[in-house]
Structures are given as C-alpha cells and as structure tokens.
Amino acid sequence: LGVDLVQWVWGGFAVDNATLTRFFTFHFLIPFIVAAATMVHLLFLHQTGSNNPLGINSNVDKIPFHPYFSFK
Image 1 (tube, one colour):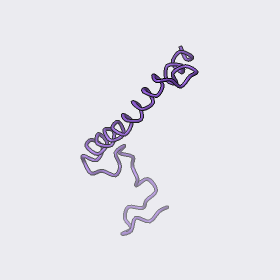
Image 2 (cartoon, helix red, strand yellow; image 1 turned 45 degrees about the vertical axis):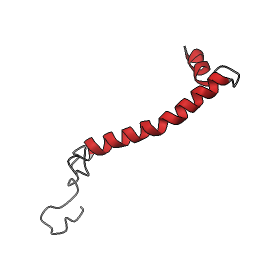
Image 3 (cartoon, one colour; image 1 turned 60 degrees about the vertical axis):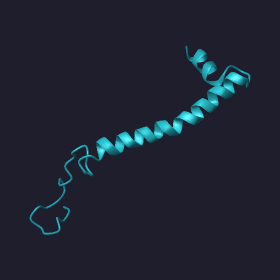
C-alpha cells in the first residue's frame, strides 16, 4: 500500500502529464486549505478572546496576596 501511495503521489518514476497535473493541483489547493484552517482557527479558538484555551492554571507558583503576584 505504501509503495502504491508513493507512486500515485509522485506519478511513478516519470514526470509526465499526470504528474504535473497532480503537482499543480496540490500547489493550487494547499493555500486555500491553509486559509480555511486559519479561518476555522480564528472563528473558534479566538471566539472567547482567551489566551489560555486549554484552561491550564497559571497561578500555581504565584503568591496571591502580593499586589504583583510574586513567584515563589
């Protein structure tokens, strides 16, 4: 399966019309895929405006009563 997949992606061992067509198709589509992923990222990850999307506690090593939250 791996060899067949590689030969399909690269068009076998010769650079013929099918290989160039496939290359230009990927070359044309990849920027749109990146743009779509960027839009999904901006719409969903930054929807709440959080800089901590995983919700990890950042106050583990801070002393809460100090006005500048000194580190231990």
